[in-house]
Length: 344
Ligand code: ADP
Ligand code: MG
Image 1 (cartoon, rainbow, N blue to C red):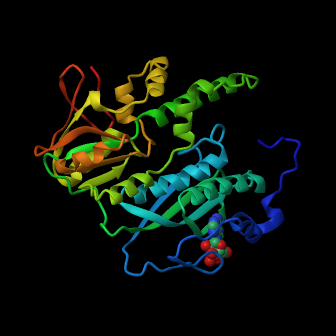
Image 2 (image 1 turned 60 degrees about the vertical axis):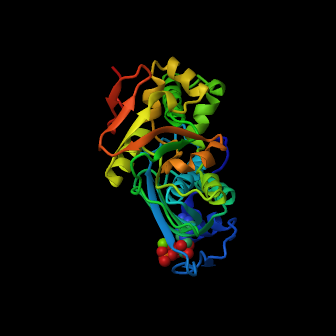
Image 3 (image 1 turned 120 degrees about the vertical axis):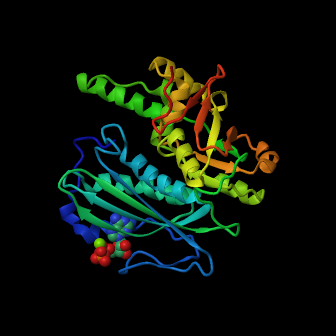
């Protein structure tokens, strides 16, 4: 955090080109497919005979993030991660990104540098090249748009459609943490608004807050799939929440599913925080978003291959009938809707 006494630099002082130079200076190019990067009217990529995958995400201040508790560095990191996650869910590898920003005069050079240090951190972590973008002004607030470009692997790509009855439904990692992290941060913001001297102690919520502020894309899972010759029949990343992603996979494949409540992977920290917020952990696991885990279906003969990896939970299976159902802990069957599932 910069001290308020420190002199901050107005962007007008250095101009648009000065800003672009400053923020893009520290980025390295690490991929062969990047033939020409920042500095011309466009970038040139050379994927030879590999198929190219492209995905774009846009984040708007006040709609997708709140800078009163979301540090700019984390925002830059998360914006890149969420785009990489989309490429992962196609069974692809991300190689390049473009980043476009619209900024109001409220943002000083130091803030934009913070944002780009998070972007750079993500580029390094995931071996991705920043190859361009656009910089413009906004009347109010910050808008950031990231386009991720990648390629398919030699095993081809995986879409949301393609599952068949009796395929197993599998999810990586654990669910619901990111949503609870957001609840904790929102609550602390309210406390702070009432009395700015209240310093929040978030140590107890480290796990869930980190799930919200610093999610990771599951590129390591794609590598595991490739090494073990596993090709999911369908796949999606969990950005909106498990239940809505399950419905996407079912609708796109023209079938349904049975999910078991007791199989949902939920961390102890998430369960504990749910208790404090008087929320039901299973409901949060189904409807909380932004976990950036992968949800996929596999042929049941691949079960042995995924059992060796502790990150995977088999949570159900694909059915021929188009209903998407949850079997609760007490053995009842209840429909899953896109808002999660109504507990009764
Ligand atoms: P143009 O006039 O064609 O829009 P710019 O002057 O905006 O070109 O951009 C110059 C170069 O800087 C281009 O390579 C562009 O992709 C890159 N660039 C501009 N803004 C950003 C940004 N916010 N992040 C990364 N690269 C950027
Ligand atoms: Mg431009």
